[in-house]
Amino acid sequence: MLSLLLHALATSSPSLQLRTRPHDDRSVVGQLRGGADSAPPAAGPAPPSTAPAPTALTPEEITEKLNGVPVFCMQNKGGGILSMRDPDGGDMPVCRWFVDANEAKMVLKAAIQANPHVEGVEIGVYALGHAFKLCGGWPDEVMPDIKATLSTSESSDAPPGLSAESISFRLQGNHVLVNETTDQLKQTLISEGVEPGAWALPVFFHEKLQVAGRIFPVFFHPADLRDAWVQLGLKDEDRPEQLRMMDLRSFVAMLQKPDNPWQLVQFVASRAAIRLAKGEPDDEEDMAPGVGGGAAESAAAGDEVEDLLGQQEDEEL
Image (tube, rainbow, N blue to C red; front, side):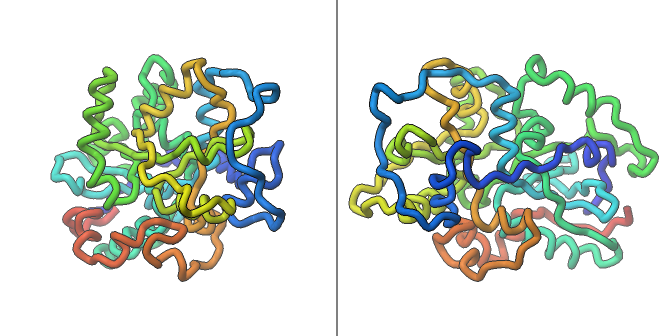
């Protein structure tokens, strides 16, 4: 079931701020994403004399960092966001913003096949920081403007009875990873006093990848972290077997505490996501197990496409 969501949500999205490196460092994240040819800097903590001071980040600063990562939704040519039946069996239609580019493309293909009469269905590109707000990543008291936007958005183009308040907004990570980690992540959120809601989004990192006190990369799939480890020229035998994992909301809460130099944090999008956001041709490596995009586990499984989409029904917009 495809339904048209309010145009106001699409037109209120800021421009995507695609970044492949921090503004003050030309080589480090270029190495993480294959964009630099110079030798990688040595990994390890910065000398005490040059180590940045512990700094808490504001919600605006965190949002700016998140906005360097593209996420993908289903929309029509006019920019209206499309909702689908809840894959978890809920009554409310669901709008999802996919972090995994390959899964977004699979969902697009399946949605077009299931709704042949609906013209112009395509992938829309959003900034993660904005999607995080829309999906309830911030408490109402932190981002009250988002709740106001959703409650006042009205459109004569929306089907009868469909409004922004009657739709579940969700961030969608790699399907296999989410299935494996959701219970653990939600238990952690509950212990932190956070209502888990309808979605969980794992992020992965390790202190060994802090590069010379200049950047602390955070990834959305372990395969991307492994890829970065190799590209930085670090020894394979030194690669940690156990990565640190947190729900994105837990990580965001941590960034607001002045106990570490959080200004070094850089959220790293997969190669596949950057290419899709830029409209560049697909890379065959994106579909290979454990490479770049990190979606191979579910990309080859047709039955999981059904899980991603839920039961599809034809319905005119």
